[in-house]
Length: 77
Image 1 (cartoon, rainbow, N blue to C red):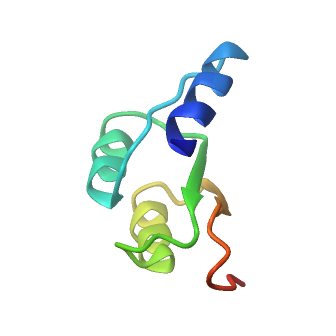
Image 2: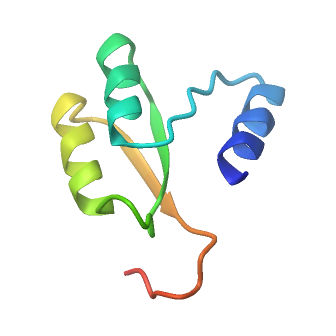
């Protein structure tokens, strides 16, 4: 999976990574530590990406977000 591969690559470069499969898991990570950058799927089939960004940046206003996707069936702005 892309999430696990990115986590391993970041950890290999000395970063801490906290993979989350959904918004609820991400909220639990953000609630217990300061997260510097959020890498997320902009084309999730299960959750609205903008709602996730809004929820997480409400918890950490200075959170930087990098939204990407590996799916090509829908264009993301």
